[in-house]
Image 1 (cartoon, one colour):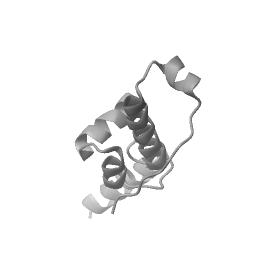
Image 2 (cartoon, helix red, strand yellow; image 1 turned 120 degrees about the vertical axis):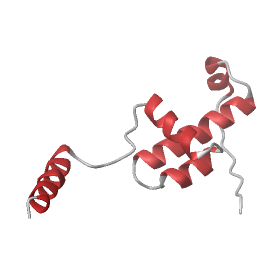
Image 3 (tube, rainbow, N blue to C red; image 1 turned 60 degrees about the horizontal axis):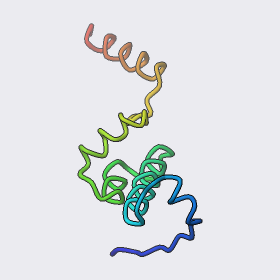
Length: 90
């Protein structure tokens, strides 16, 4: 089910961004999806659907906007690798 939201944006903002109403609406939809994914509120699939793009394209956009697609830390990765090495020696 699709929902329609109404946003009130000052006309000068659209003018400053040099975007048509349709372009600005798509931009805001994409930026909202990117932010909701970045904060962990949406999965990449759900965010891609919200943005109206395929998941692979959404992940490419994450890279373009420097949004990490995984939340694993360096410490987590080192621990995981150490665990793998320990079990492979058995």
